[in-house]
Image 1 (cartoon, rainbow, N blue to C red):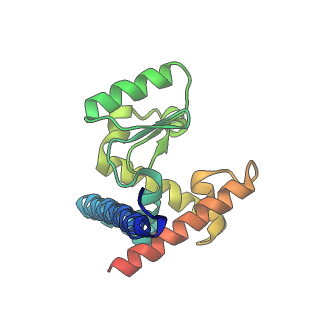
Image 2: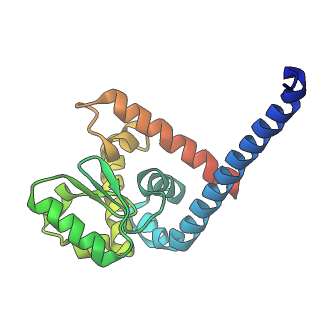
Length: 184
């Protein structure tokens, strides 16, 4: 039987290997987020300029909402990652037919907006349109509340319903803004 002291260096080596794997996986995840963001970043130029919304803020919201995945959905509080736009359309339509809340695409446009304005799922799922709508919604909140954490929180959560959730969301967006600025 081996002495415990002889096993200790081996255990440290295993722990170090696990830590390195975690760090490498996190770095790869961050790199893929940056790659996804780079692929869609130009979509933000025109709507941010048109609605006078800081592009870095809109990108931070896209990071928080979807990780910059163009066809991601949130159906009833659960993320769904369709492989294609057609699959996303089918899933979103089916969920909406049953009355479930669906958040759609890069900016996670809620099905409420589709019902309110008569927009089709295919239209809002198109990345360029999704970003336009998301930036427009954010601009509405900025007009109401100024360029403040309240406007950012209201993009996600009506503060009168859940102020703590809104504040936590705004804090997450601040972290994303800092990360984006640090990456430049």
